[in-house]
View 1 (cartoon, protein in one colour):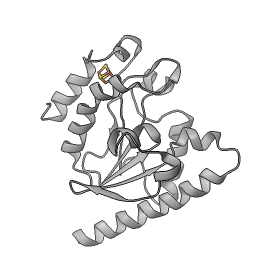
View 2: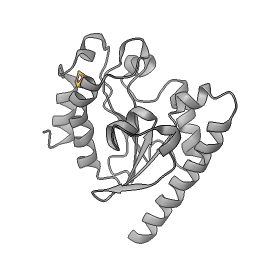
View 3: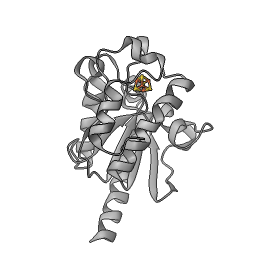
Amino acid sequence: MEHSWTDLERAVRGCTRCKLCGGRTNTVLGEGSREAAILCIGEGPGQQEDLQGRPFVGPAGRLLDKMLAAISLTREEVYIANVVKCRPPMNRSPEPDEIQNCLPFLRAQVGLIRPRILFLLGATAGRAVIGPDFRVTRDRGKWAERKGYHMLASFHPSALLRDQSGAWKRLAWEDLKSLRAKYDELKGEEA
Ligand code: SF4
């Protein structure tokens, strides 16, 4: 596995481990602080992300920026990545074989960043990181800890954009406040 950011960037850029390589314009490794305490993990690049080679830059990305701002964080203070680094066609969800092939890159990012918190955005990230039985409506908002990493799942911003009733947005706000509280608690422990 890749042991430096340079190796990881090179490996992802040239990756042909799964069929998503055939349709991509750019790979999208992630961006933000490489010393971040919070690693936000989404599903995969969409159209804008694929064109720009950056994560969360379309409408869902603008919402993520607002969500972070609501708890006084910026995208420069966290690191933002996805489960898969290449755009699935027609914005479908990544398939299990694609996720399995790409997960070593996410694990390498976790190993390099060593965040305190994994903030999982949506069902794909929850299933990939927490386990195959994960269900976002049932399991969001519950803290779990594994290998010293604190993990919290919430809705993907794309789902929140489709949420007509506002019910998911209200729950997402509870998750964000919980994220901020854990972040402050962990910072307090380090001080
Ligand atoms: Fe490689 Fe991941 Fe892209 Fe598949 S999605 S080609 S595993 S970088």
